[in-house]
Image (cartoon, rainbow, N blue to C red):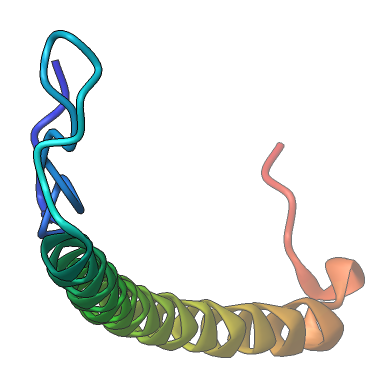
Length: 98
């Protein structure tokens, strides 16, 4: 089971039941506007939370990419040193034991 690292809140935008079991409306027009406004506010909160999560993900990704860049630069330096040694190597100068 994966470990949850980030949460997007609010999870549910509007948990208001507008009708009773018989199908009759439970709210008036003014209450319906309040529910609509509450849902819209929660949608905006959810988008803001999503932006913060995305920012956190991209910040972490940027740090990991900087680490990879440093490691690849170190490998490039090592490869350049090896390339210089290979270019300077002359097999005719090496003595072979009998």
